[in-house]
Image (cartoon, rainbow, N blue to C red; front, side, top):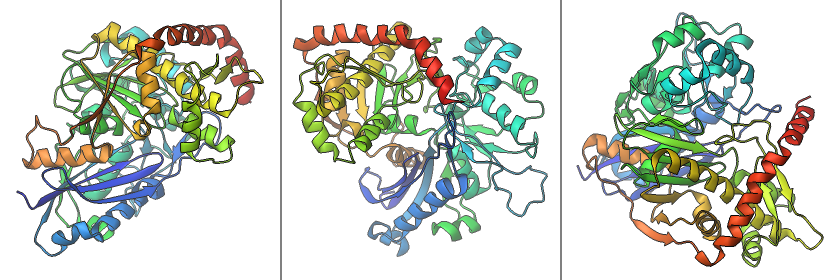
Length: 508
């Protein structure tokens, strides 16, 4: 088995990434291709399923095939055993009807609608709440309907695209790629558990009766657990990607869960903090529990459950601020923020630049900087950005503790862990220790691990990552952040009405 390699591919809003790994987890080849997210109007966040998703996958596959690390496969001295794909989500793209005679059966009927940052389906959320009942949805699905839910977005597509028929297949980002690679229409249990209110999180199966009530005639894909066999690469897909025909393709999952798995977040009590364009948290549960402020989902490990939360922004705010500063490099901004004392000399930033997901569920919340004076400089504001995101994390961790107990281990992953300052501020604000793994490649690494476990190259209980460093809180500044955290909470409550009025103006 030592000469069998696995390929992991992850589709993100900013880039699609691929890693080719040996059975020990060593990366023998990597590829990255940039993606573009479109924001055509307030509340809309879209990508093109063909050019952004499939096109970027083709690019990274061809790059891998032409790399030195792939040479042994090309020479027949090694084998590509399996590949697994994860992606942003839950996203939605609908293709032509199963009964259609269209020359391309995978042709999308609309731009792909993204996850919680796309808030277009508020009307459909209210309609489905009225039909099924908000409390009943929470009990059966493990969460209330929000902009993260896929059921209302499917209804929105039906309402706005008359060419979409009940038997039109629908996909998230990674399941669309699996279809293009294998011809099979499948979806993993975790992603299905974010298709509220179409999935029963307690029974871990489709809620067929509810699907028929709110979306009559809707066809539902076959369910698989992440890492189970979906199909094999077809001759057509092999020709397009350069990968061997017949290569086994596994069901993947949503990127945050694949990344958590890559970091070793698999045992009850493990919590992942993912520092990315949005901040995402996933905690593995010993038993399913439900909180109206959080998301209960199926996990990566078969029959497991997780409790999750996601902020609408995080790294995207740092990128926004960098752009305001003329594109100055992040190292300079970080160095300036390091020179500022904790608390940014009395600045508090509310990072609701795209509304907020958990725990507020307020798409009309808006960003604020409170406490500005003429003394404050660029470094103060950038530090306040980091601290404001950390306050949002603290708010979510408090909700997690109330629902599932204090996390046993917290593992931090993502690009935001590099440079240390952001992670240190989070530890200080939240009074937590964070373990940073030695390899933080991301979700694609978790995909490659799932493929290796499927092949038997790696035990189901093993992981490839090792602990690199532990970020510990500075207890000497706890009182400073406690006071600012309370101001953070009060600032939203005091300004919520004003935020909503401004949102209404922006949406005119």
